[in-house]
Length: 393
Image 1 (cartoon, rainbow, N blue to C red):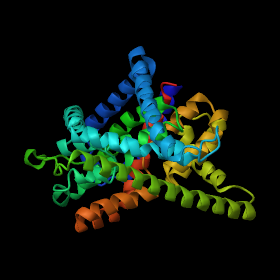
Image 2: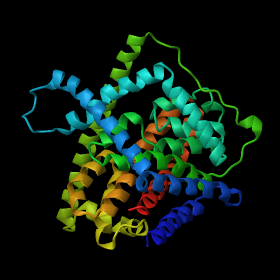
Image 3: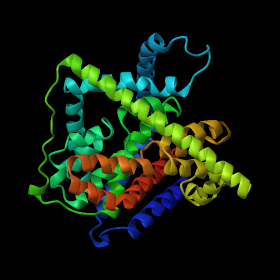
Image 4: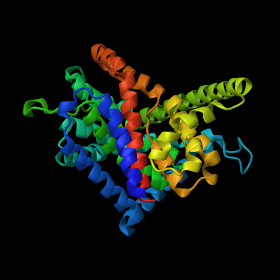
């Protein structure tokens, strides 16, 4: 039965992507099948083997340890601010971002992260047949996040063709940064978060290869990774801490606005048609949830969460999902959890377009033109990742 839903979920994403493809005749099906096979092998290894489970568990414990270390700084600054036993979202999930940002800054400063990213990007390029730039970017965006990741290729962005620009933007929307992973793990099971990060790298490239297929000449694939001038170590630590704080303020502000807006919409819907907005969206997304492998009885609830992520952002969806997940099956929890771990929403389209525009006005305008197709691609990538997760549960 899982295999049947694998086919229906993947076919759904493939058919929609094929309909909106820029050049159907140029789709490289061999490349797509290789990446799809890699995803299935990886998810089976991570979820069904002792080595895989131990690895995922240890990664989860690592981030739990990092969060515990971050807690010392949080307690020093905010200790006693709330009653014992209470756990405000901003303190539990957001404030650790400051320390995580500093840690990433240090690993980047001592060249650990650049070496890992280049190595994994090279391997990905060999396996998938994608360009070196696309492969590097797909890996780096899962570590550095946006908009910072665009700065690593700021010299290349003005020179990129429109086809390559779409691919890197799809990767940026489908992946999540290492700094955000810790926050997600406070709301979702760590094993699903780790698995989603891996799957999304391939899912974004798969969808990009259908909607936006192309081949590169040898001289077109030359890539140089930009490295910013090294600041003094403690200046870098301070700058990283401030970047983490800016991220917290941004996320908190978006949550305040979006959650309140969702409540307003719900009040209007309940007053007019006596049904919540999430329920209406749940019915719209229910067929998609069913084709991904979610049990029929839970498709409306799951569909509502999936729609919430698209309309608002993943944080709002994860918070809502946490309230209902205890009443859902393990399979639904696994599929929806993986689906939620990406930046595929309307707000992120603006962030991506703005990041590109800050580097190149011309390229930023072009990204704005294909914004909806970009959101479609990133959402379909999440559908693929969630569907593949369902085959091992």
